[in-house]
Structure formats: C-alpha cells, structure tokens
Length: 207
Image: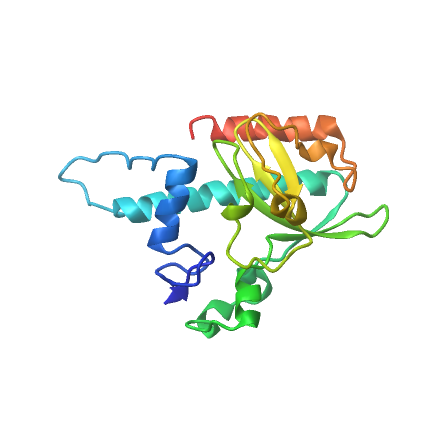
C-alpha cells in the first residue's frame, strides 16, 4: 500500500497517516467527529474510521483552497506542489521505499507561491486546526523543507509561522498574534484576509 506521511509506517491511504499517527493527531487537536447514524435497513457505507479520515481530508482540502484563492486574488502566482500534484503516480513507485529522497518527496509542501512584485518564491504548507493550535512536533518527523511557511487556518483566523520559528519554540495558539497579515515577506492586504477569514467561518462553523 502506502507509507504514512508522518512516520513512514504502513498506511491504507496514499498521502495519508497511519492509524497510530491519525489517532494521535485526533487526540491532540479535537475529538473524532461521530459519523451520523443511519437507519438499520440502509446500506452501512464507510466504516467510522474511514468516515473520519475522509471528513478530515476534506477539511484540509477546503483550507488549502482558501489559501490558494487568497493569494491568487492578490495577484500571486500559486502552484500546487504536493507529491500527488507534481509527480502523478509517484505513490505507487515509493511503496516501501524509505530513502532520504523518498522521504523528501513524501513531505513536499502544498504550494509554491511567487510574489509578482519582486519574484520572491515561497514554499507553503497549509493546515486546518479547529483549536487553532500548531507546534513544531506537529510537523512530520525529519521534515526537510526548512524554508517553508506553515499557514494554519482555523474557524476564525489565518495564522502563519516559518519552519525555523516553530523549531525555535514558537507556536500557533488561539491567543497568539502570528497572523498571516502580519508577515512582512508577503505584505498582504489585511482587508482581503479578513474576507477570507469570513469564508472560513462559513465553511467551518459546524466543525
């Protein structure tokens, strides 16, 4: 099958987490959402584990789309850079491979973003966190992209720290002021960010 994007162990889903890492992440961030109950005569559908996995995968994709559209609306060039986007079919080739290069590929950030004003280019990793919490230990083990920016989308805010800042001990929390709009590297229009925070509220209000 595939390898866990966090620890490298076996996982059922390509580009996903193994059961142990998935449970650890759920415990740290938020209790598992219960699958809606169905009438007994209905088809069973997904297992509870698969339902929660897909549910959280969709939340992550929504967060990625919000950030992609935010930067596009401000004139940035945005390129999807994740493994499944850059090298289609690579998951099959990397089954069971544990080399340093394979690990780097598996941990590729979500986007490459280019600033049209000065041609600066950035690696961007997007995470959704309902509790607005993210720290260095939440990154995959041996995460190789030390120049990446980690953008955390929550129900109310969009915050950002670099890999180096996380490594130095900084954290994204519900009370911190590490807002994306405060990053001088991007120099983004704060009013536009507020608009996208409103989108996040609408999309994630029941999460």
